[in-house]
Image 1 (cartoon, rainbow, N blue to C red):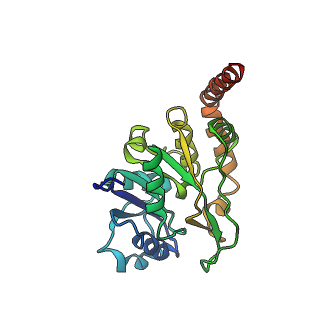
Image 2 (cartoon, helix red, strand yellow):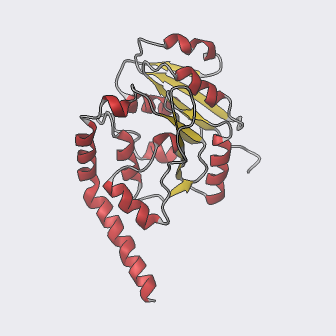
Image 3 (cartoon, rainbow, N blue to C red):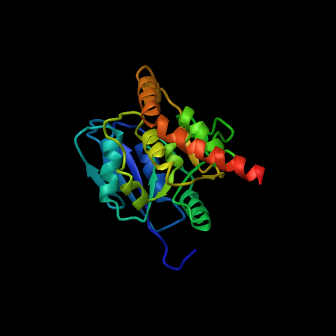
Length: 248
């Protein structure tokens, strides 16, 4: 790694989450020290006291409630890091997560990278084998993403300028802002897969995917339809190149 170590901004959107102190703790315990931890309080009315002990060690931003995309964007606007990393307030990073993934990105000169992860329960106990979805090449990856989002947002690390130049997260999409952003980036960047499961994704009754399960499918359909033609053109272009190589 270069002597001048890039700064990584870990952004934690927070709204009434009882696990937020565990998330902050895991971000502060990273073995890679050139990190800033930004907690964006999206108008919470519960569990705010759990942030208080950490306020001297983090950048704390409180805003009116507007949803996860607005919180992430506020974090990005206030970030000073070279790299973006997202940690949901109910999830955890293993201590070496940032260091190992950043080394991987620099080695491959990657602009954006997503990775492997474990499921955990309310008590932080691992309840699964690694469940990340790594695919053999760009063609298979994009075809999978056209069908649905295979990326866990909290495993993503990206160069900050890439996120900003793409327009950040679409604040009109309450639940699929991440899927939408990845689809916007696919035509311009290769998504690398980081195979080490250093993120712990918490499964619990109050998680957003459970609470909003009745409305999320409609929003997924809208995002897929919005990007369908553009993503299909990328797939067709890669398909032609694959056939050409095989022919040669």
